[in-house]
Length: 149
Image (cartoon, rainbow, N blue to C red; front, side, top):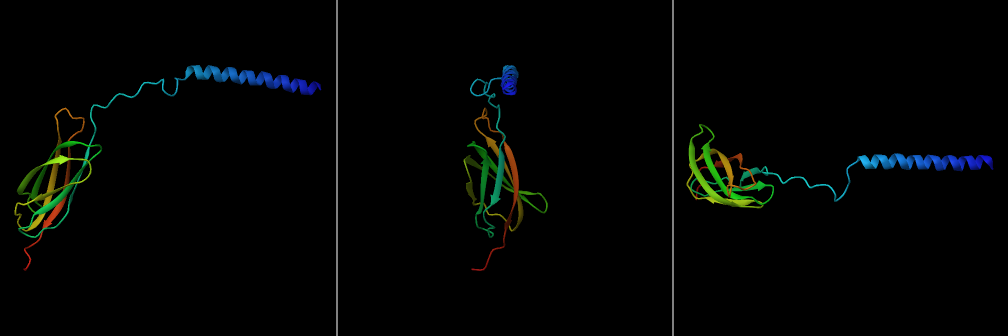
């Protein structure tokens, strides 16, 4: 009986000591849950552009491309510049409105000569005070020779 009483007394003392230690630690920690302040709103949101050629048109046919700007739903203008892959000569430049989200498809009717092109895309967000940043991308597109009819 003496041992049982001493074990009970010892367990009470140990339990009260642990409660005291955990109470002092929790007072040092910041409160959790809704009591903390939210993080500040970012001044800008970094965007990434992804451009792709939809087709490899024949000479005289419209070139088709698509563009996606992530994340969110940025608004702005996209400028597509067609450069000759061989010598860097700029052959055509097109400016189109980007109305995200997701893929936006564009068709350019300018007659491109046969050859391989590097298409450079610049996305400029609007309005000027938009939180979305501007971005760039490049991809390749090939214009095939005119086929037999």
